[in-house]
Image (spheres, rainbow, N blue to C red):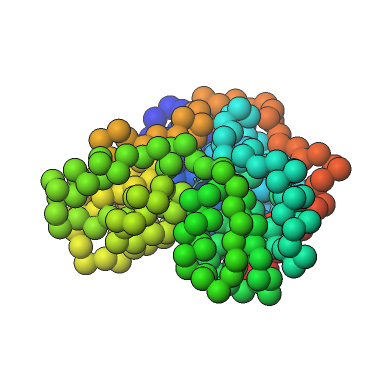
Length: 303
Ligand code: 13P
Ligand code: SF4
């Protein structure tokens, strides 16, 4: 049953010919009014393909920036302009310049969870769903992977023929997840499979039955014959997991992994930006082109 706010959003969306995109980590009521829900890769792809002139991006800043970089003519409105991924800032220009000096054939792979400025210093962008494939397909032997040390270490383990250099960036939500909270769930539900996002720390990744992006986790759980799963990622994913698998059980670490930044997006803010056209995301002209090239290379390399 739709609420007054949901109806208002529907009406405004139609009036403005806008489309609403949402990441799996935003709150359930925001996912419920979205036209498209997905992981970072899917959302950047769909933002590029859609013909709507206005995109309402329910997620964190780097996601809106990515949509704008791929579709400069579109208006991308962020319901919350302060919703920002802390990891997206966790590398410096000096770290990148130092590695470039050290290795002649260096490729700088940057996770999509970065600012547009960091993308402009990099060669190819990746997401958790295509990082392994892209690292493998690059001609370069030496790869600087920024900023997530956990996703970087996971990719390196899958591409042993390449030499990887890392920096110390991480997602606080996945890095600080407690392995003993995972093992106690495993004791409680011994038949449950452990599905892990690659941003998780090494102790948790070592226990995983499956490691993959948020979409990867949802697809795995939906296709698996198992009935119970322990989920090691942000618990907003539960909305789609349950919707697509009403007969299956999903368990989370006792300290529920919640990204406070993603949860900043509210229905009231969506109504506000639809009404006013405020919070349009802009990318500074001095690095727009270089950042867009890095992002477009991902779409060329990824299948
Ligand atoms: P994916 O959407 O690529 O699974 O990444 C998760 C994430 O942390 C997004 O901020
Ligand atoms: Fe950033 Fe982690 Fe939140 Fe994703 S879950 S937006 S990586 S802080």
